[in-house]
Image (cartoon, rainbow, N blue to C red):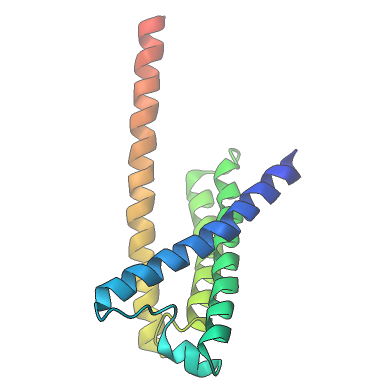
Length: 152
């Protein structure tokens, strides 16, 4: 049963990663505003000597990214772990995956400054999402406790 859940989550993550990558390229292309669709960064096209190969590489790596995030999310189900341990392990895993894919796909400048800037943005987004989810769960738990208190 656990293997089926892991497989299902990873499989969904593959397609989720591809979908997110595609949506981001649409948003970036619209933001540029010149009427051209940019499926990947120009430096990736140069690196792989053509747009088709660059898009294929980015799609495969985006699928890997989505699958990695999905698989890592199983950490949140390790009830015997503290929230700190869950957060630390999850963050370490997704950081390695994200930074590797971002570097290969040229989503960041290939310099110490570029890597640190990308990491800083990634970390800030992680913190915002983590805090939002934490607060959301606290509110849901509080509502459940209130309902339980009324039923006693």
